[in-house]
Structures are given as structure tokens and as C-alpha cells.
Length: 315
Image (cartoon, rainbow, N blue to C red; front, side, top):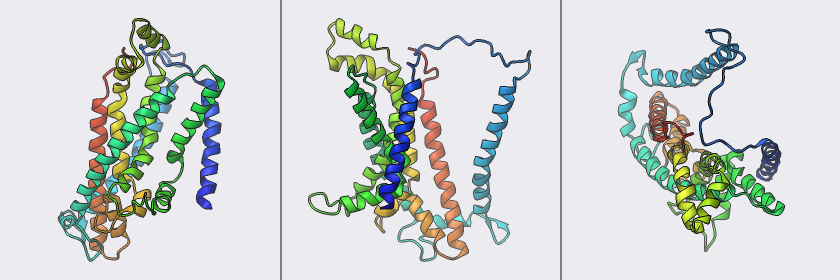
């Protein structure tokens, strides 16, 4: 019942935000506009807006860096001395806390993340193409708006609800997937699909419809228009979409906690299991595993950013 209440609240919030967005939405320009001088700029110095933005950025960076640095420092400390003991213990199962080593769990997380990313990107790109259309009829526009809200539901609903739903929905033949290894990638993909759609959709919506009309006038069929007009522009955001999906899959815990098998846990599940067992050794391993997870996600997102075009506004 609580899951249903949460779904209703999130659906209402998405409906309100969607209506507000549509009322203000404008076509994005694909060419970079010339920058005009800011009315807030005072001479050659920084404007009040720049100062405020810099202060907020510094605070945000501090809030992000503080827990990361704290975990790193504490993962290198044991009995008041600096040591790599906790990282060496990642090759073990801890003090009877795990069934596999942390490195095995990390490898399993990477495999699951690859599968989930493939599923999320394929489905997310397809949904983005559908949502980028501009139907002439009012009914068609409402249908796309409803589809947009449904796609965004996993982003607003707790991942725990998503995992719970999969657990009770796919437990009977012919869709009994409780023991299947594909269930976790599917659940993680459902969580990542909204991010893929939001990374690709603005680019597709920014395409001038006259480009498609011109291609059709020159004799290109719908498939050819999709490949020659939509495809190249959608590929601009593909690297970032892959990075988001992969990073979300690596760090996803809520849905995975319901579905992970004891002999194939993911890295976030292992971290929670270590924190749930007493002992300084298990706690230190949890800190070290958290640092490893943060590094992997950081590398993934840095790589995704490098895959983005240098100037995404150019045609």
C-alpha cells in the first residue's frame, strides 16, 4: 500500500512538472548564440552573479569532497597508524561477513552494469526518439506527455519499490525470473532509463523539423531520415548517456538488495553487509570498498565527459 501511495504522489508531481515544462519549453538552438555582455557585470571585475555562483560552487564541492576524503583517510588508518591493511583484506571474505571477496563482488558489479547499460541505452534511445516527435493532434501530444511521465516514474520512485515490484511480479511461470541472472540488470536498467532519456531527449527536440522535411522532400524514407538526421545528432549525447547508465548501475542498491543472490552480490550490497557485521576489520573493509566504488564511478563519469563533443552546439 505504501508503494502505491508513493507511485501516486510521484505521478502527480511529474504531471504538474510536465505541464509547467511544456508551458515554457522552447526549441533549443543548435548553433551557438553570440554572447552578449551581462547587465550585472561591473567593469572588469566579477559580477555579483559570478561571485554568488562561485560561492555556491565552493560549498557544493566541499559537501561532496568532505565525505569522500573522510572515507579515504579512515580506510588508511588502523589502531592509530597508517596502513593498507583494509585494502589487502578486500581479497578476503572478512570476518565471516561475506560469501565472496570484495573484488569478486566488484567484478560482478561491472558485469551487471555492462548488461544494464546496454538495456538502458537501447530502450532509452528508442523512447527518446518517440518522445521527441511533435504530433499534430492534441490527443497525440497528450499521449506523448503521459508516456514521458511513465518513463520518469522510476527516477522519482524509490529503487526499493522497483525491486519489490520485480520480486512479486516475476515470481511465477512463464516469467519466473527470481533465479535468473538477467533480473538484476533489468531492474538496474529501469532505474537508469530515465537518465538516458533525459540525456538524449533535449538534443533530439532541438532538431529543426524542417531538416526532416527537407530530407523527405529529397526522397529519403523514414528510416533514412532517422539515420541521416536524428542519428548523428543523437550520438552527440550517447557517451554521456552511457556514462550515466553505467554509473547508476554500479552504485544502485535499493532494487539490487531485493534481487541479488548470496553468491553473486554487487559491490554496494557487499558494503552494506560489511557495515551490518560488528568488528573493526569489517568496518575498515567497508570503508575501503566504498573508496573503490567511488573511484570506479569517478573514472566512468570522467570518461563519459571526455566522450562528449567539445562544442555540442555545433551542427
